[in-house]
Image (cartoon, rainbow over all chains, first blue to last red; front, side, top):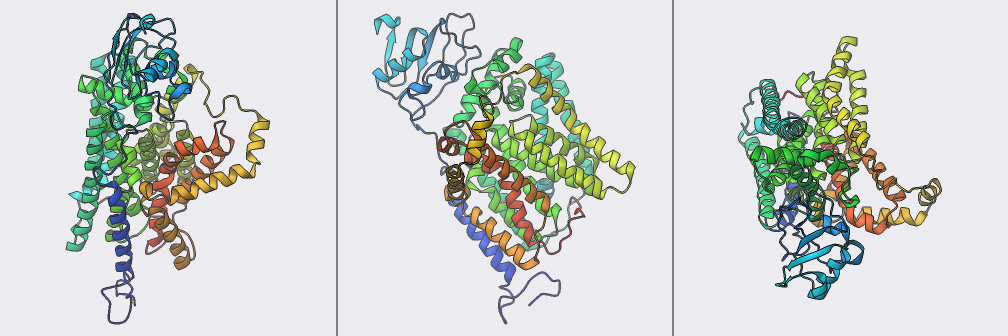
Length: 145
Length: 428
């Protein structure tokens, strides 16, 4: 049944309040509740590696030292294909890191020491020092590793 | 007041984006003070014009008020979710820190040689993408006086609010629909999980979707409702979409074509047509010129077309297995509850219902946008030089976000009481 203003149709005789539009709104309320379950604060998908915290690092532009970030070499999309010079540019550094540039690379990695070191070597950079998020702290050039 | 805010929100959000971009760009090409002053002046002028254009709010019934409050609460939940995500991931998602924010940082820290920095960055940073979003972030950092993660977060938040406001505007303006259903539809849209999570991730996909969606809606209000400020803002939004990512150029072309059709079919006389086209060009031209200039400087080809051969493209287009894989991923994506909730089936249901009850589909502009974008992405996936499943896994959900508001609005508009597509409701 249509209301006088043409706005609603009754669901059945004697139940004018539960019209087609009410059903529609009920449907929207259901979809809303379902979406809310996923979109509720705290329910969103978080970063792939919850423990990793990046830091924005202000690099020195004198070519002597570029502080940066190297991705975790054990991540599925990291590894040998990407943990190279490109990864070094994920440092958010404002200069292109050149293969012959001496730099300090800050590694925030949950990879093993060996993996982290291997990833650093793949950058083809002359690394003079390195810090790692897993507590690894070494000073000196690659020859010491 | 709340409904007035809903009406004004998308335009205000776009104006804030313009302020950030103008401040960033003008500072980079001129001096700091001139850039900031020009950005703020442009913002003030646009806000003033907009506020004068929006009428007084109508009185609402108790029920209607409750529904509007529901929509507002839903947007608030989205905002809280984005803020909560930011508290745990201030650098956003992968593409944000690896591409958008990285490029912004490159410009900000190397302002004397920012253009070289942009065009010569490593391929992974996508130097072929136009730099509108990084420049907007730089504008925010200049205004804030420091490099802070708050700016990309705020850009995402503004885009989210703008997208929700545009949905409210679109459903009300494109056809006659009951206010309660309109508010309920906006509430559902506002808590769509992927819309919220992409906004929180600080990806460029939410701003570009907002620009294209607002561009279409604003141009309709501007051309059919004869409101000049909306014609200019609509043109601006379309130009900004073209300057954000490569796919934005297709979005801009589609919206411009639809706007052209509206101008030719709804303008009263030749003078009206010239006025509409002039305002549209006024909004779009600066962005398209900037894009053209950037393309002239950046000689890096798009990664999807580089190293492609005609034989390779033809072989991919005619490979049935690729079609099958793409369709399989598409169905899985539409039904993915953690991305779209139940909105995928809802859209399909609404369209079936609308065509069954009315016998014809309403709002062809929204349909054209959704189908046009879907077709474009389908072809892109068919011919992609990357491994197909990897490309689908890493980008399909984001490309679906680009067409989601159009498809959702199109579905909701099937419940319109009458096919009044040639008029525009007052902005109150």
